[in-house]
Length: 218
Image (cartoon, rainbow, N blue to C red):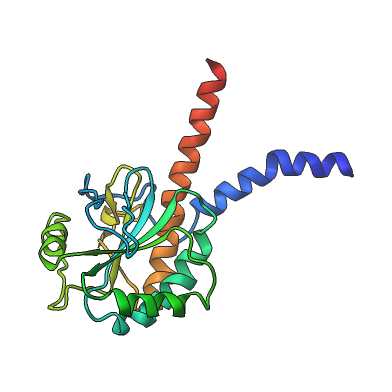
């Protein structure tokens, strides 16, 4: 009995875990690239002066704008549906962009989020309105920021700074396009984003597994 349990843990469980992360409603074998190699954002700082990079991280990127309170519900949805499910993945991070001058409101928001749980690898960065507009334009998206420099959408960025989403024909031959995920709509997060994050995490887990095998052969 003990021997069977050990065999299950060593061989069966990893396969089950991979199938869990790779399966779902997403009909793409690999999450397509919407915009390749978007700029890094190290010029923007957190309230305590720290820099944040997109390099070598799977990032959920959001642009909140001046109306911080308006986006509060979206933050709670994002925390519960996306962050809480993936926070243990060491290369996973959340980066939210705000215009300079909103620091006090963001501090209140962070206090509210702490009621939900820890916020490690969840970063809040601040930039000038001009730099935010310029940066967003370089993402080459169909969507746009509103007059308060915000959007309800968040975006998936991979470790090579490619913005990923749904584009082209899926396995069913249907055309799909989705560049961002609406934090105000739980259905969008639950039906689409949860699955797309699973797919991209599975990509990296599989790549890591292949690299480990290759290294053992050397």
